Amino acid sequence: MPVIALDLGGTKLAAALISDEGNIIIAETQPLEKRAGPDVADLILLRANQMLTTAIEKNMRVTSLGICVPGISYSKTKKVWAPNIPGWIDYPLFDELQNCLADKNLKIKIDSDGAFYILGELWKEMQEDAGMQFFFLLEPALAQVSSLTTKFCGEHMTLGEPSDG
Image (cartoon, rainbow, N blue to C red; front, side):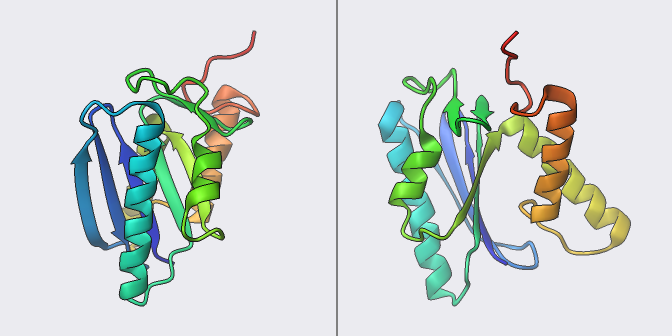
């Protein structure tokens, strides 16, 4: 199924609509222009909803939205911390997306850029080794990365997340 991928950095937001075959249908990058807190979340929502509109225009049914953040995604609380985005300490990004996306049935996955880097490497390796077409947000691959992060970081933690003790 087609997916929307968003890569949030400290200075820009990259967004892409990816087809069933893993091809990039449309990709855009926009500078954050000193946005902070809720303004960054508003930009993410705007780009995600624009990608949903594009998908509808192309008769594509998007099922998932993946967002990597330049910091930590707390799997238990579904909040994020991004040190280079002012106002993003325990920021409720998941809740805002769930409440404001045009498609309320969209599966949302938010994780650190480090975790998505690993996921991209897994995708690339699976594609090369198996000769099959995968894209980086396939559920089995997410489960694989989730298993790896649990193994190395604990049950309720994501890569890079500090422990409670």
